[in-house]
Length: 367
Image (cartoon, rainbow, N blue to C red; front, side, top):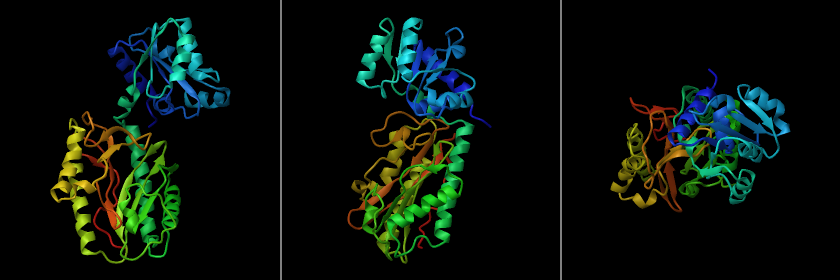
């Protein structure tokens, strides 16, 4: 089943009309990919509101000559124009004809760009509208969820093979483990990796976003793996924490605590839930155990065409979860200089309960 870019543009046009906006100039390349399927490195897209006459027929994508063939293949259903300064070209076209107002993605447009656009279209009102397409992207359609499942499967399968072949063992370096895990994700169908794989052993596991080094894995270490695969532009994100050799009592205790917190966060995922309340459900478990100050980050985030996207799930987060949102749940407890645990899944919010996409066991595993 191919992506239905036309339906996504129709939803955007309806959102524009609801806000009394004539049109939107889309310059965020991720949003352009979402709305059209185009994956080039230079483009702009002009989308008219739903009540504009011939709105879809007037939608136009602009890119430069390097992508003349690509835009024809990837976006056969829209008129394409070719200009190196793609956004400026479309702004000039607005200056020559309607609409009289033009919304733009103010969260990605620089001050200098805005000043130049104002000169190119002096009679058009430029309306800053941040995050409108990102709001639409929060809810994943069936096509997107299928790609997320494939990305999670590639990551799950790679981790299973890494463990099966003894890739987590004393004497290896963090970098060696990370490189092998990334290669295995590609071997299991990933188009790429979601981000630089985190491998954090021993005391390094207490650093939430530690970058792999030449540190050598040793018996008794916590080893934290935070990684993801990318398939068709969509990303998975998961974290598992293992113990090498034999687990000490304190390691079993902190692992069990984080596992209870993660379970509480997963169970709090439901359409309409305040994101701050979801964070609170997981955080409360750790705070009640007396370790609240060691949970150093938010509970999770949206995931899709970007590894971090809306909604943010944290203490200061605002808004509610939507049915079909893809999010992570990833509490952690970190003892500086000693070690830490994080457990993370990618899930889809559903009315009947969250759909778990990362399926590797979360039981404490000693390897």
